[in-house]
Length: 350
Image (cartoon, rainbow, N blue to C red; front, side):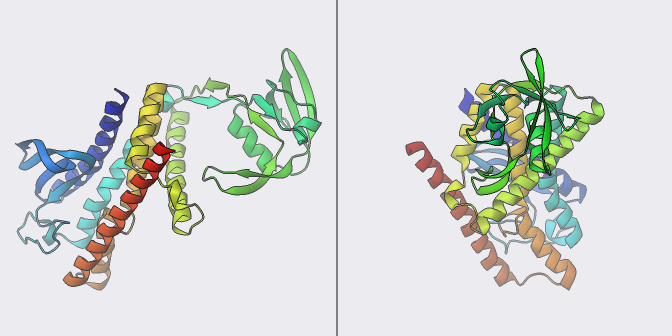
């Protein structure tokens, strides 16, 4: 059941991406010949609104085939009034941007729904106290709750960690231990740790771990909008940072995941409840939006790059060069997919 939920989530995200292209193209007067969820052999289809709506065998993507545009053969062009080829570079860029934009909008909506439902967030409750750390020296204990730092109220673990990381000098902690309130003074020290990309970094810490206690965030309308905006921006920057680190070798290539990882993580999220599914779906949606903006000819970003060239230099990219770049783009894309699949299989075997 969880596997089917994973496929349904992935297909829905792809559907919204392609729907963005579809509506933008229709708005620009371009005919959509095929709207497909999945690749390969067609297993079901119907014709409506001048397009063939298709479900294909391999549910690992999707596409809209516009009149005059075919990634499998860039030489296939049409110069009819309802063709993609007769549109201006800016109109084409608008159509191309609409897919990734739909993913960002969908992610914002999902984060908004999560915020309305009251997302769970880590409380500032101490679990492990590291020996010979500032926290250990100050006699902090497991299950202590940090209520404030230097007079500033602390409500979440994230707030506490950020305050400590950016601190300068000693800190005065108000700590609740059972029914007792204690005032504790300590000084953070720079310590080696790992970040979300598994890189070794140094930052100010006091030597405590979370107890895993959570509480619900009760947000008003303005706070809900702020939460959705911040989460969408954070997810986008996180993915951009991860791609940059992979590109420059700061993160090993074996950290790259493929479709099996996506299905497995979505499956795990479904077992944790609908809130986890929505949260992970929002993250994948942002991921799809960001990845499709990469300047790889087989992706939206590559086509945007070609149209920017045409807009700036008032001429189309040489057809032979475009074909070669498109082939290179497909090679890069399939190589990345193959590497992700290889890493997924290694993790499963491991």
